[in-house]
Amino acid sequence: MKRLPFEETMTDILFDSHAHLISDDWGTYPPSPLRGAAMPGRIDYAVTAEWLVGEMDRLGVGKACLVQRGHVYGYDNRYIIDSAKRHPDRFVSVVMLDAQDPATPEIMTDMVRNQGVRGVRFAQTYIEDYDTAWMNSRNALKSWQTAADLGVSVTIIIFRRHLAWALPALEFLARTYPSLPIIIDHTGTPYNASNFEVGRERALGVEVMMPDGPDFGIADTIGRFETLENVLLKFTEINLDRLAEKGGDAATYVRRLADRFGAGRMMWGSDVGQSRRPYDHKVAEAKEAAALLSAEERQAFLSGTTARIFGA
Image 1 (cartoon, one colour):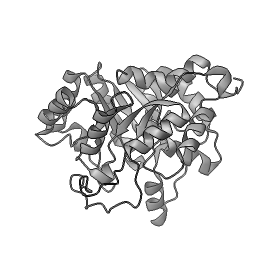
Image 2 (cartoon, rainbow, N blue to C red):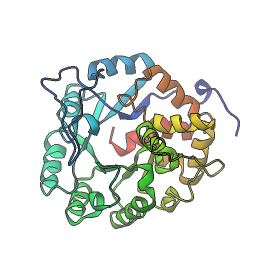
Image 3 (cartoon, one colour):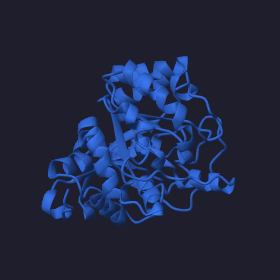
Image 4 (tube, helix red, strand yellow):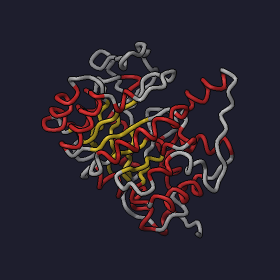
């Protein structure tokens, strides 16, 4: 497919599916640990709601999902919830909860019904752990059922080294809850490894090799979800970092995903707050990554899918 300039094929406002906020008020919103994890340190930069609104206005990003930054705030979701309440026309909140906590179904229900929350995120908190109880234990299944009953999406983040057993477990969940939208952060292929994970493995002498095209490792990972329409893929800066590191082309990778899954199951997320790359660079890279998509596919990838899933 011919690579076309963004302006020739797409005029709709963008919808950022993956924005992390970090408050500059550490007294009101202090760092908080995830289940079992060490207390995080204070980060030396902020990504406030007001700053992000200004950047969005400047760059043509209409709305954003505020996704809880777990390694800063853990399960204390107050800052993104408060921010979405202050800017309801610009933000929706996607909270992080501990699926295994028996209190989570009640907490989730209150957040959705009374605090405007539009999605929930589950994550493994230990890179060294190799179990799937965090997503499919008896208590965790009650959390999944609650999300399905409430009609909100579940976002899953999986370490690259855990894909081999976590993805089959996720397939079971997707088949168990076929009406529940399930979003896989960072696409769930070998290109989903964060800079932290790659650096950690290389420090241990393990070389992280990313698969080449045209398949990019899709068949051995997320290919199992091809016919499961309730499973969606989120493409972020982490994927761009891995592709750039190997000299890969983001637009070719996104085109391959669209060919396998359809652009209506794909969404772009900036991952602002995870890295300090300027927001205008992130938006420009998103448009370039969509360069091999048709106008209709670009609209879905850059805004439409996210708007549909989060009711905006």
